[in-house]
Length: 112
View (cartoon, one colour):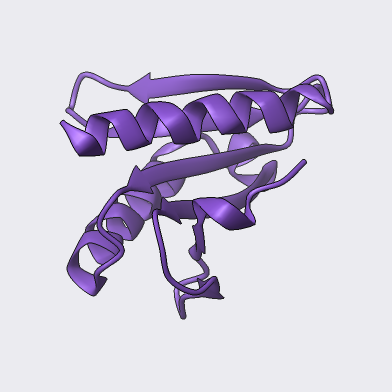
């Protein structure tokens, strides 16, 4: 239950922050079961895919990152070029970039 509440809080924050740039936030799920908690898209087409995880442990972040990488590999090449970042939002911990390029950041570091 806490994970769902945290995800709702994070998506709410992303909606507020993206609103300053007239961006939109969507949820993604396809017929293969692949999903993404938040797709943030700007009016110029640039987008960020974000997964939200209450648990900031390695295993949880790694599962989220693998899901984001699957999504990146699945989208059309034109949309892949417009991808600005893959992001895992956590509840605590340090912000860092993984070797695979996925960024990890605690919710407290989000800002417009």
